[in-house]
Image (cartoon, rainbow, N blue to C red):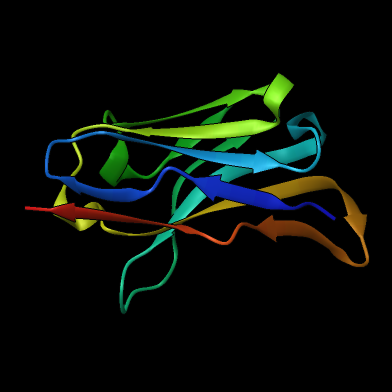
Length: 120
């Protein structure tokens, strides 16, 4: 099992920056991938960015050039730096871990989410 705890959300104005953190209960080295997803009110959850073991990164087109994912292995933490925020970035941001190991039939884990609200 993997527990994920997100933090860093808040209310900001358009053009501002935020950094989200996701701390895992296990080494992020043990993950096939880690990523950030978001869900706006009335919409489906969507991929924001995903980093795969080996270093390749998948960014959603709507965040390219504005958001950056990074990690601190010593802290078991993945970060999402969000710059030039727009009102349409508003939503609940979730961290997801895809473990290399299957435990009790699962290898995907989600955090509880952190709210990001961008005012115009």
